[in-house]
Image (cartoon, rainbow, N blue to C red):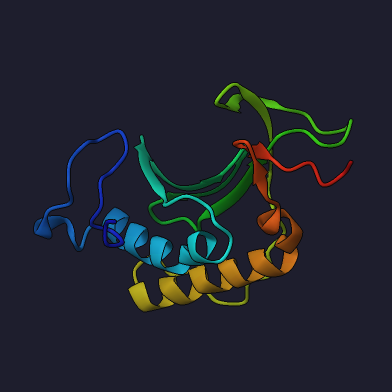
Length: 158
């Protein structure tokens, strides 16, 4: 198990050096993985995958066919996205969101967060991210608790 902000970066294949500890991406990764740790501990999501992609950084947690993705670009507040297989007829899969051969939809949960986002203040960033997680738990409790059977989401609608 890796410490938050020090683990292997997916797609880069190296470990974070001490000189990078004050880098905005390293700070965000550390605070995000600490705040969203509840997904692993309480809801049995996977350890986070950290994927830098261009200007953006993705911190992703997977559980079966579902993913909680926290996307961040320096200077902007994080974007939290939920990916899941279509359930309703109105659900529209996103072509690039497929994972392990399963088509998935993308949605943005409505999160009521009162903390101010400040990417220059690690303590304020941590407060903001903790509020995001608390709001996610309030609004998406059923989705987060849904189980996995044989590697795929448990179908609670049948």
